[in-house]
Length: 92
Image (cartoon, rainbow, N blue to C red; front, side):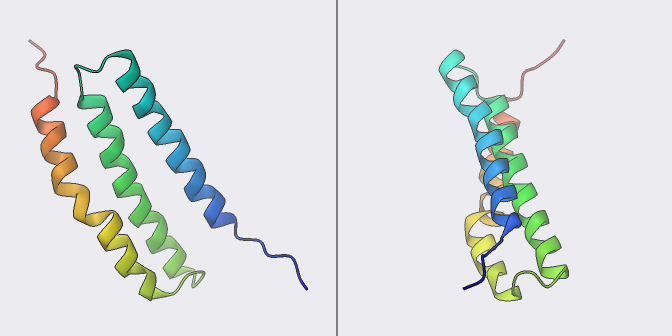
């Protein structure tokens, strides 16, 4: 049986661990502020679909996976953007 090699899975996992690890650190450090957590969450929800588009373009993944991406990522753009807008620090 040939070995399976799916590097895109590891790239996605690395992105999730890296981005959301920073969120956990920020929440543990200062739970009262949330703009960084919202910014990182939104970045992850934007980078995921971009990666999926690249995989579909390369024909590494089928176009049917876009449904999963929509329900897991794109649908969260508005809530994360609103949270980021509300939590953004006012710099005077």
